[in-house]
Length: 114
Length: 111
Image 1 (cartoon, each protein chain N blue to C red):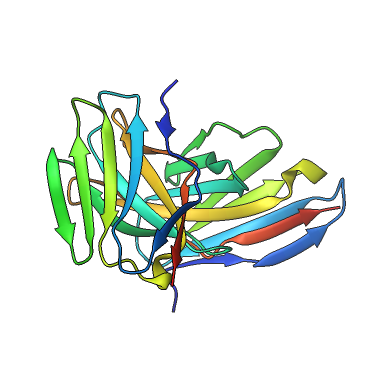
Image 2: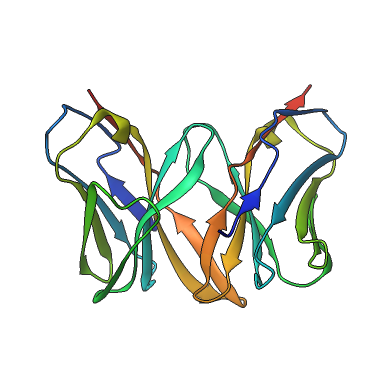
């Protein structure tokens, strides 16, 4: 089984709809992240969480919210989806190993907002 | 603003040759440096990390770090078509170990 899972893997939704992307991990890591990736722009951080009670905004948090339900679960919500939120979304976890925090990624969710 | 810069490419290399990928960063306080490989439509996967000046070798891959010049590079020897992917450079942000990401270099290995 995969260490970091994301659901759904693909989603098409309409403008104005609320949508939730879910992430679960079995790695036992405290730190979890949500990124979006657009062609040519690399990975941009939306939110990150260092533990269940510590949630922080990333560089592009506007229009998004998150919930850390447990150490293993971190959900991303789009309260009212808009077309420019069409992107590939990745969840990642990290742990302090070998002197730094390496990040491990889920398979991604491809979201299309029409 | 802390930045990580990579040439977007594509970088085209003949099969069997050495592919050289470069990355520069702005934060002198950065301590750890990572190379990730990402196939189209897939998630990034960690190839190598380095935190000391000099070279670090792992199989066909060599990471090179020069903190004085603020650059890190990845060499791929005996390039294979399966190495064709986008390579992402990531640098830790010193205060809380957040990663700052480059936009990636697309590498194409031609048979």
